[in-house]
Length: 229
Image 1: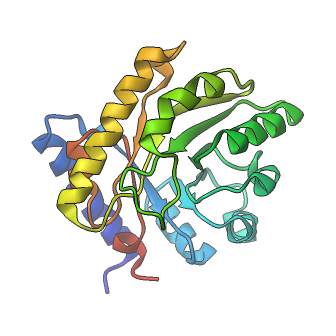
Image 2 (image 1 turned 90 degrees about the horizontal axis):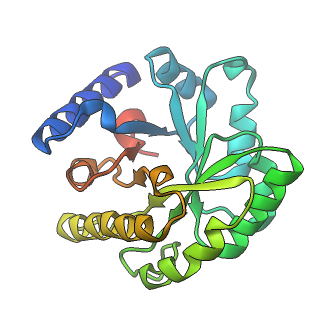
């Protein structure tokens, strides 16, 4: 089995090739290494290989891992990429750089409330259910624009873009990535500060090249770096 460092290098080369093919700059896509169910030692191994941005999906696991002594005083940039319940917001509010999994107004309101309490400015992405699958979280695409006005008014939090988890079928995934990109373009037209809407978090180990072709600015890769869970 290849090392985490070798896997990271291979992914970076794939990102570069996909960007060039799509006519984009390679540095326009950020790699978020997904470490859910993986131990802190593997996070450290990836960190030592130059990876700085990591994504976690489960609050309790994230709290334990981020507090592990092996990662103390490290320059890690944490993303929370899982579905976030309102009652869990307070646990992560001061520990993450970007929250990917906000999918309803009430959760955004809780994020805003906690950010105010901590005197923080928090960036977040809105998760959209582009596949329409009932098993997936995310705001329905047709609710996005009507909810946006309320989202834009919330203090201490800034909507930076959209996130989705696509269907396993690659052709369906391509359509869903395109849908997310078009939704972001529509959102910019009604946003008070459209220049802040810069992020599309989409694409994982099996489909990130298609996501890059459709405009992804962040891809979330776990198994191709760390192996299957």
